[in-house]
Image 1: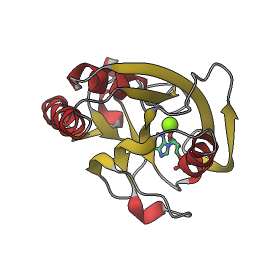
Image 2: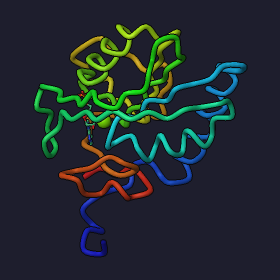
Image 3: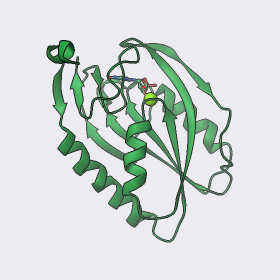
Image 4: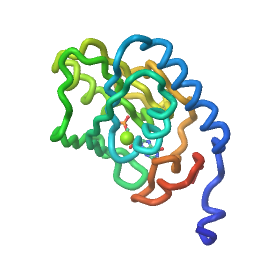
Length: 173
Ligand code: IMP
Ligand code: MG
């Protein structure tokens, strides 16, 4: 890791992340009071955010996972590969799709259309990061951790060619 030290600049610190994730958990807990949530985590990028978020939610919460891929290195391929296997039953459930970052919005558009067609009782989107300036389709997060400018970022689950996911903060390359 030492050799990589100067290759990135910290954009959002571990402390800021921890504070914001707790706030999101409190907001979700109060809005879903008396209900049960199915959190659907998109792999791999959202796995660290979803783990922290799930622990800051105080209402009953099930975790599901889906695999989505649209990036190669630091650029979007423009097409979204989604592995729809192993999705828990969604009909009648209150689902929250948990994403690491909304960039063009293509991934979430595809996922939300797919899930909505399965008849959930409600569906919301929770994204850790949001890059609104990059949007190609009309998708908004119901819950967003931080809005950022158009930088390629890594850490807290986000990668560049599978590296940097384990950084506890968000950094720009
Ligand atoms: P979208 O479909 O263009 O909104 O892209 C969403 C996916 O691309 C995210 O879930 C990430 O996995 C990946 N992605 C977008 N921007 C970044 C970034 O700055 N760093 C790392 N991954 C990113
Ligand atoms: Mg993702």
